[in-house]
Image (cartoon, rainbow, N blue to C red; front, side, top):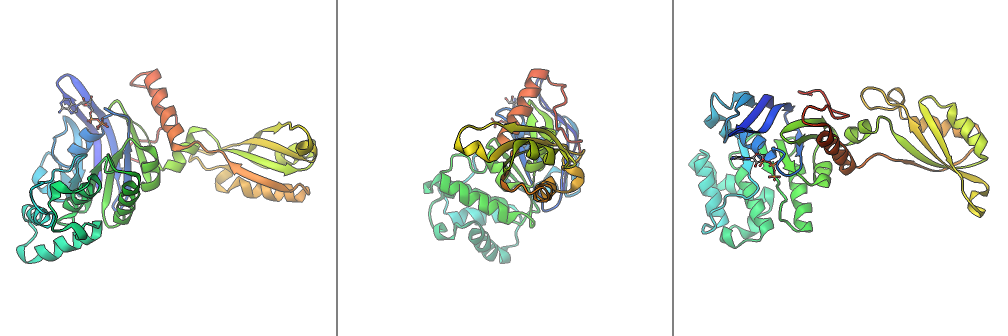
Length: 339
Ligand SMILES: Nc1ncnc2c1ncn2[C@@H]1O[C@H](COP(=O)(O)OP(=O)(O)OP(=O)(O)O)[C@@H](O)[C@H]1O
């Protein structure tokens, strides 16, 4: 639905975005993550047809941004970081105006605007002046405006910026509800936002793509293998021997404990081998094999926990690696461009 190939944008002598290749499937919610100044807004403006790329091609719903930016704009609903709302109009009046601009036929406008207001939860303020609304409501009205005309693609730039925690939760729920019916490109520098809303994350830093994958796979891939923490009842030597038999288990570390607690149980940290795709133990869940091995040896597992990196740690690791290694570095866990 959205396809960027070798996209770059230059302002004066400075490249805000360089050689960006990625695609977003129909109905997918893609999170665009990066620190301030990474090039997120610039990329989104190119996807919406508001800014032509300096190099490469941007295609949305089969339309090339350079060939036909006007037709492309009709296929995209855009919510900029600060929604452009006419404060002296009522919410309903403003959305009718947007519907007219977007070419919604006159006889369908009223029903369509009512439907969109219901969808984003602003029907209760339909008659209020848009300029008098709270930040959360204004963002929702902005989202309603993006949805007018039912565009297949939605581009949302920092959609929860400036909202209070409850408004953030509601906005994220709204965005999740839009998935499937719309293809959504969402930018954020808030990691939990992307992890909770998006199926796939694309991380950019200093205008370059440094990784793209699902939030879970990114964290798994980056640690080149998953780590598990176990607490087992049994003698340390027997526990270690039993774990070492399980295929894919590497680096078994036993933690020595003190006092009463350590008498009959042992804490273990272990590393699992991963294949190319980031899956552990040849695609099967190694925790299952560990469970059965320990059961065979009569060693009850009291606790088993996965120790994946959080998306926050992944992000910091990728961005720090890139900043230290320079602009041409290949960050660990970088997916192939174009999926
Ligand atoms: N119209 C412009 N003219 C000149 N430079 C620009 C313009 N727009 C963006 N830039 C520069 O391009 C770089 C990327 O900016 P961009 O706004 O795309 O980043 P961002 O990832 O959206 O950051 P933020 O989260 O702070 O909005 C920055 O260095 C910015 O100063």
